[in-house]
Amino acid sequence: MSKLIITAALVGAEVTREQTPYLPLSPREIADEARRVCEAGASIVHLHMRDASGVSSQDKDLFAEAISYIRAETDLIVQVSTGGAVGMTAETRVQPVSLSPEMASLSTGTVNFGEEVFANPLPMVRTFARACHTYGVKPEIEVFDSGMVTSALALVREGLLREPLHFNFVLGVPGGMAAAAKNLIFLLDLIPPGSTWTVSAVGRHQLPLNTLGILLGGHVRTGLEDNIYFTKGVLAKGNAPLVERITRLARELGRPLAKPEEAREILGLKRREVL
Image (tube, rainbow, N blue to C red):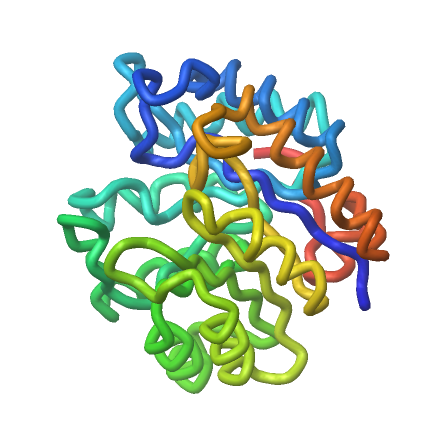
């Protein structure tokens, strides 16, 4: 099995300081958290931003500030979100791609998201895919349901995505595919040979699905975006403890960790030195 890539999803769009005091909010706080997860063993940081009031924001300048700190202080792969938050326009969501980060998330379908709808109609997805191509950004295909794999492969046929693809299977979102081992196995049967993949899972499902991802030879995402607890009822004191636990598990299960440069080689990336 290849070396394990750990992605740390630091803040997300939904979690609040009221839910956990350990949530980083400002660009400086997010960059400090990125440094800590890098030291803990992560190779990728998945970035959302918050405005001064703590509300999710896709403001390009906020991303630029955080990315400048992260690049100055770590060798991490920076992956920006194009998901933003439910209800944002395509023009708002795509802003950080123009900074030419190494990676960006790309959800390839619409899904119920709790009581709301995370809308990703194909014309919007095509716009995001074209932006990634324009700015030399590798998309991470975010999969909340199996049809999103099908849509991604259709975009390959249209010439808007290029293989080898990298997928992130996000399981356990209310309205999406359940966080079950059989669902992950099913999704793996759908993706093209040569693809790379990561598994994410929400809440209490994060640790068991991450463990399964390690065993199956994939990669994993952990962090406060997906789960704020270290154990039942006990808050994780930031993102680093969650990454450190994956590092320990990987060691016990015989998966050496990929350093950022090794992760770049696995994913076919070339580092961006400047914004």
